[in-house]
Image 1 (cartoon, rainbow, N blue to C red):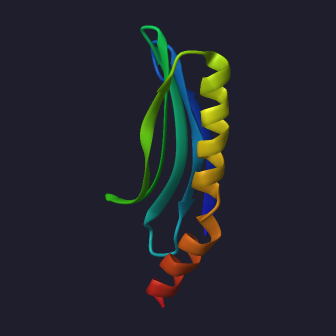
Image 2: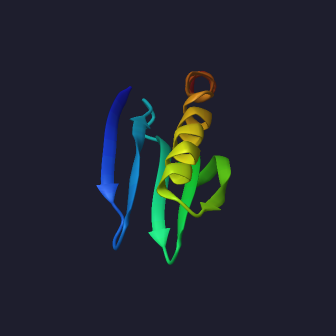
Image 3: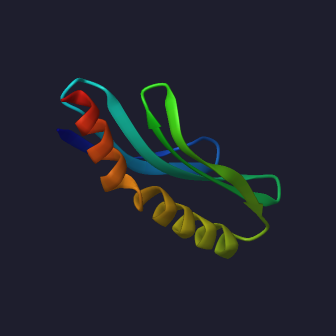
Length: 96
């Protein structure tokens, strides 16, 4: 299984970070969180997807300050990372 970390900007003012794992059967599993500023709020999202299937989607949270946005981003990163090993093991078990 291959893995690749990523981080990129979301224009005009945001960022997305995470990791993509490629399973032996070619499917990609993506773990990601993002923060975007729009107007007077910071919007944070998180998700786990396997190809077109959403395995976990955290609700968008909007907060007024960058400090609050970074706290939510950190929380969401933990929530996305926590089930990673279990989900990948389940997907690998489905292959065999």
